[in-house]
Length: 106
Image (cartoon, rainbow, N blue to C red):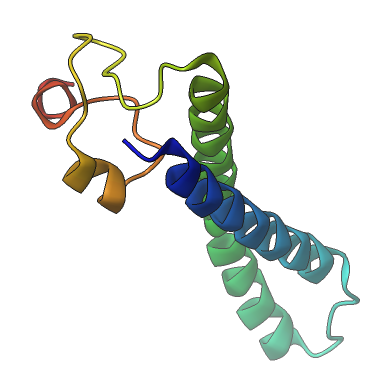
């Protein structure tokens, strides 16, 4: 397995997420519109941005864990059953700690 390729993909995704989360944080600190209707729309947008931020934070944690598994030499091994994770699955979800069978059970 080419772990260097996965490390490159994971680091690129991490940089992308960190950039997106920075922009979300900047949006939260931007001055609010004094118009009531616009403020209501901004509040709705804030809820969406907050959810995107939470999803991004969870993915960042998973990416960091995957990078740690690469460093330890355990990347590509299912954390639950110890069997190899199919490269097709890693190509789709490179930060996954579980093989397809174990992921389906949890």
